Image (cartoon, rainbow, N blue to C red; front, side, top):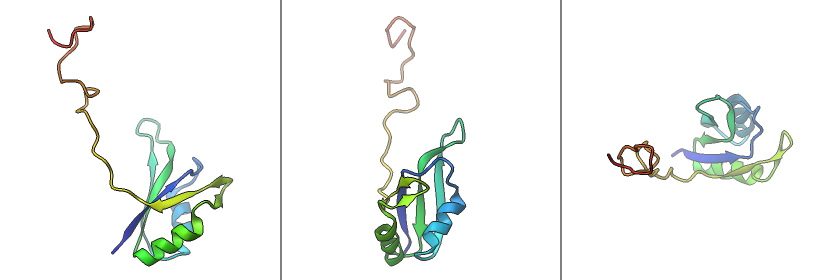
Length: 106
């Protein structure tokens, strides 16, 4: 069963292929995803690497966590499940429309 790892404190220039190459030393890399800003397309400085099994993922965490990569100390650990976000696109409001005077309903 594959295992997903969080990789943080990346330089903004690191590419998916850079991470794949770095992690492939420890086993088979199934997927790499660097998270980018939706508006600018620029890296947010973190990403995820999916390794083919738990033993390879553990080896990568032990070897790479807190190690220097392109001048920055990497954070590498098991990825946690994504939490549900509050709100529904209206900034978490009650869904009413504002009239611009502090009242949320007409």
